[in-house]
Amino acid sequence: MDAKVGIIGAGPAGISTGVQLQRYGISHIILEQEKIGGLVANAYLLENTILYPHGLRGSNFVKILEEYARKYALSIIFERVLEVKKKENFEVMTQNNVYTFRYLVVATGTRPKRLSYFGVNYHVTELKKSNYGKVLIIGGGDIALDYALSMSEKASRVYVLHRSELKAIPSLQNHVKKRKNIELVSGEAKDILPITGGKRVVTSAGVFEVDEVLVAIGRVPNLEIVENIRDPRLFIIGDARNGIYRQTSLAIGDGIKTAMRIWRWEKYGNPE
Ligand SMILES: Cc1cc2nc3c(=O)[nH]c(=O)nc-3n(C[C@H](O)[C@H](O)[C@H](O)COP(=O)(O)OP(=O)(O)OC[C@H]3O[C@@H](n4cnc5c(N)ncnc54)[C@H](O)[C@@H]3O)c2cc1C
Image (cartoon, rainbow, N blue to C red; front, side, top):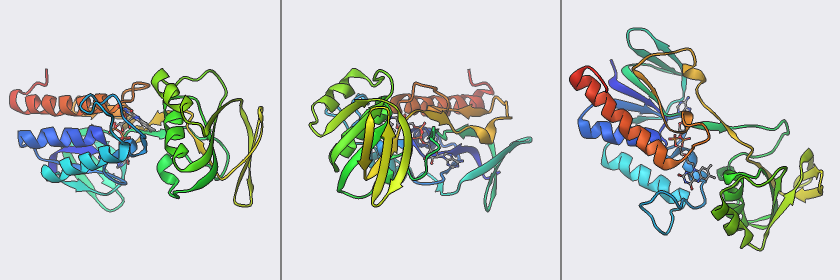
């Protein structure tokens, strides 16, 4: 066995599981396909993590997770998990390796719902330039408005195209309303076409020529790798599990609770 616990994903849920397991002295390995931090790298300002009354930038949240990983000497292997098999233990396949664990924690988060148009972006971290002319964001939820705040510091004009009533939390709507370069547009995208240096977005509210388009119309959990496995030693946590309740504090709470349950299981033979 490679370690007692395998954790897939090094976002807030995976890192908090690892930290708590390390405190118990339970061996574990985190497998991460990209970087430490996960989705939170995209957040403009987290206002509800409670420990930070003045809010915390997503990029700073990532630095804190990296610091935890260093301080607790978490063992993180940067490989994408392609398949999981349950035999007596869990066999976890990446491109080059097969790992065996007694417990498996799936903290794989979510991925964006996509539109059929080519050349649009789904994460604000994909837009790396510091200066844009115009950017159009499709969506009216928390993520769309949070993206609008990020982009309003990098673009001269930001359009937020939302087809129904805004669903974003009122505090975010208030922040957006204070930004003079953000315009809320009620309408629906009909077509997105490439033009020199940008995109032409045809909508029910008119035509917009912009540098970039960001889409935030919902997310789906990354659970395909374990979709056929039912096992009490398999834990699905964080955004991958929490449906519409996708929040860092909930993901962190899930991670800590999962590590506590594994410890009880090891010590008493029963997690409850
Ligand atoms: C714009 C924006 C603003 C937000 N604002 C807030 C806020 O104000 N307050 C708040 O509490 N929350 C906020 N969130 C939500 C927060 O980011 C998530 O709730 C949190 O990141 C969930 O953590 P997680 O660890 O469950 O998943 P994620 O952070 O999504 O991490 C999952 C990790 O798993 C990895 N992974 C996935 N599949 C595999 C695989 N097959 N193999 C290996 N690795 C894999 C991914 O690369 C990723 O690193 C915001 C999110 C966004 C996008």
